[in-house]
Image (cartoon, rainbow, N blue to C red; front, side, top):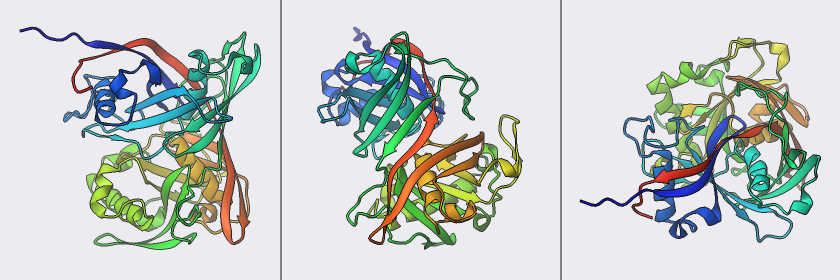
Length: 394
């Protein structure tokens, strides 16, 4: 019996921040996968190795965590004042779906370098030495990201001495600006309920004070102590507790409903990427997962966040935007845990260490708005070539 050979698609495997994923140029994809739909989803699922009932993604490029089950599609932008369009797909590990509902802030750091290296940015905009400014349209959330990419001898500089907790080796620093990151929604508010803090009732679980915000990515912030945590937890403290994970998922579903992201609780199962759930606490000393000691005086606030049903090993980039924004608004749970008052930056502790992020927020006509959030990340190419995929379904 004859069998069709695999197809070979140009691809780049990249790390961006504390995530990694498979990057494609839009024009390199099979024609049926250049547009949204079942063919595109089927291709990306097969590339990553999902759905995998074993939860290992052995037969694909994924590495069986939410931070590594990721895909990116990039093409030249037709939008004025933008260089490229960037589309992010969060691939489920054990289920047959790709979540397109949000951005990946960490992989956003790799978009500018990929675009420059692959000729998607006008060469006239790339200096021989210095910083190239890449204007990115984030297609999932319809927002602009500005990447400041270091260039040496006309090429993207990837090596350097910038250290990012959650990434083992140093690299070149790359600054990202997330412009107007708040979700506009029907009412134009980044706080979809209209409140900085709500009582979130979760039947069978409890009622919790919650700050629900749409900035960077929809996020539900809770108080660690109210959940029975200190805020210094590492991955195994949460991910080894099936009952705790189920409780967080129930909270997430009810929060999504309260935020207007879904119409029924059942829809939450097909929207794993958003919203995120995080819990915050006042600064305390702890030992990061790397063994690095973090002193209470080293940070402003403790934050732990879950992604795709598990506690994240560091912090999602988009959740970092939400943290920066919430910290800048007096009265949110993040702001209160950080000591209250006005601030334009916050240094938070996460399971792998610390991260400093900034946001410019202001109160206009009774509504809080944020003009941009800023953070430093790094990125580098891990491998480039062609990914091989059995041809079926696309």
